[in-house]
Picture 1 (cartoon, one colour):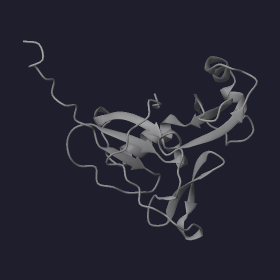
Picture 2 (spheres, one colour):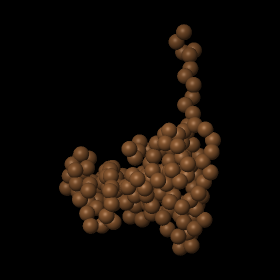
Picture 3 (tube, one colour):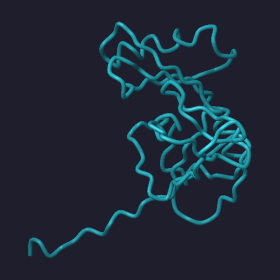
Picture 4 (cartoon, one colour):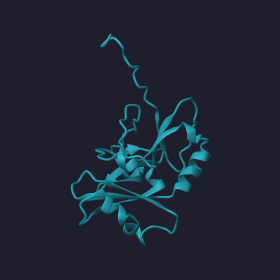
Length: 169
């Protein structure tokens, strides 16, 4: 009986935004997607003479040499929306894990982890992060900014947010 059998609709997992000092009550059941505040990673937008992503990945660590604090970082590279540019990420996995433990987020409940850079790219207006901070886009990079310095701040809506394919491993 082709055409009469229907697959159940995929239930979307809720998406939460995680900042270094923003508390929230992690309740409920099921899995969640997490978007990391720029406070958890470093991001640089660079135009390179390389054309493919694998060549850009080989130099990711050197892009950050001498510009970020000493630490144990993992590196990711993503093509930017602007042709010829790449987004380079350096993140401390231990810092992320520690914050999730502080919030009592069980690892088994995490569906995916994403960078705010890839999820909030193309912001037309600043987005409220918490009582004192908002997210803005400057030069193609998403950064936190004190809300008192910004006008036209909008609330962050993640209910119907469609997540990108770029996950933090």
